[in-house]
Image (cartoon, rainbow, N blue to C red; front, side):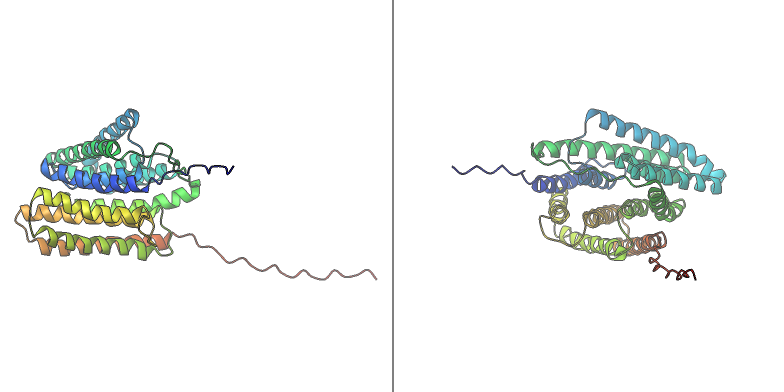
Length: 355
């Protein structure tokens, strides 16, 4: 009798793509429907959470994330007076904290904790240099956005659960100490110019901070070879998708249509990210594309509600995004280790024979 074949592991890519698409749209609807302080924070954090976690958050990890938010808010608020009265020392200390946060994630620490620490340090400390009430608004936006993203993560895992016998994802490789230090320094230098720019207008340049954090995170997994194609290509594609999204949304403006259009665009990106549709780009390309789309679109909606010129603001913001991306490509090239070609062995001198 023929021996029955062993059942193959179910393909988990379909539920993961659905979780990312539906979760991003739900976070967007919650951010704008509940009128959160900075609505685009919730979908940006939701993309990072949904793309990074294939399991629902345990109570322990959820509590850990809340403690991280508390720690980052307290640290950012404490560093704000230092930035105001001793700017050079404050900037250097922020740079050191960014380096340590990125390095901890590369050396086996929780990448989400590292991400939220970087976001909290930059956004809250920059806001605190202008006004304490502005810093409190940034704290509220970050906390509520994270709570919305964590809640949506649980709902999406309930709606589209991971297959019970799906293969576990491979463990994240731990970089060596010199390699982790090099990549962490590179990522910190990618974030620092946007942080310095945000010291002049924290709320106005918050999208640039979020974009630079996404680029810094992406630079930790991107080699210098092909960096311009990946970093700049994902930024330009996210901007082009934001233009198409805005034109489609302008046909009928409502929260439901906002949710449905985001669902469509996020599902298209998720299909590429999880290889359901063949693509030559790595997953980090599509995460950065989706994050760019959410940031640009969310800020344009806020500009429209405030009565600003949406198209001029979008052009300026897109130009800054491209400048930040080109700077990130430069950092990737400068910090790529220089490997010398192996030298050919020198011919040995003939040994004289004894007479």
